[in-house]
Length: 424
Image 1: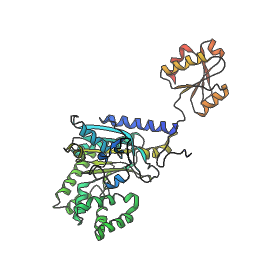
Image 2: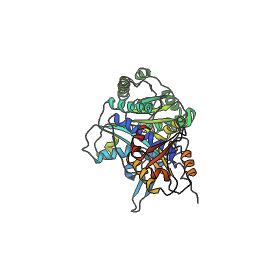
Image 3: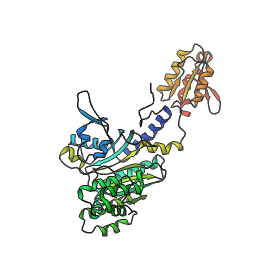
Image 4: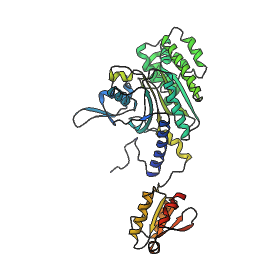
């Protein structure tokens, strides 16, 4: 029988699982410092929700896990956390606005498997629903930037574009309106297939106009908006997009976020984006570690009334890949291991429960091994302290405590264990 996980999915053994938990807890703390509140949604959604027009696009649906439940209803595993959020907002029309939520849950995509790219992975989203202001976009970008720095990722670049600008530039190049999204999806593949690959795919779709599109995506820099504005004179939607990015850039500077650049090559593959879009990249060859944008029309698909919304998602799998080489993974969460010899189990359990009740992470031998084997186990698990109990310690109501790093031992009365724990 094959016992390895399904391709694109992983087991996380205790050392890595604990590290992931620690990273996620730091991320939650950062999100809450910015005023975001937690939300959880089901892993399975109705297929009509996942397949709704503009909820992702046909290429996204190809990567969405779908099946029929035992009642014959077609359902699917969520592809991202944004569509479930839109459904929640539509289903709860009385939520106070703006609604600031964070969500950290797994999503599933049947795509290519590579380093930092799995088919089941965690997303960490922050979103603001109910504000048209570019302050909301600046807030989610600032939150992501702050969070990455807090967890130990300092060197990154925030790339920002606007779908209004990009769509207007593409249409100005002579691309029909109904072809724009298809072109943008191709441009979004720049990181995957490179410039030549994108050019070849565009040539198949739009012929010689591919050269014009490739010129568009070459515009990069904080000063590029003025030059683009000249090209988009008369294109109202594009001018609005430029004004949005000018405001967004100004707000980010006020928030102390300076490591951003306006980049016309950024397209984002999802169809529901309507305004600013953004990605965060690190210098390492692992791709983007965060991405998002504004989606002012998505909620209206489900509720019948549009609500402005914007958000960003952090990719935990890639973040963990970056952080792991910089830390030593813990073999155990246990701080004190109780080892014993002889007929002392009643006293051992009394000590163990005292330690646990006073907040100490504590473990003891449940196999009946020799004392040397117990000490060997504690050493292998890198547990810092071992409490040793024998007949003498039981009779005198004390314990022997060994510091595993130095080998130093001390005798501590049972009644003094609480004070001892305060010192470690």
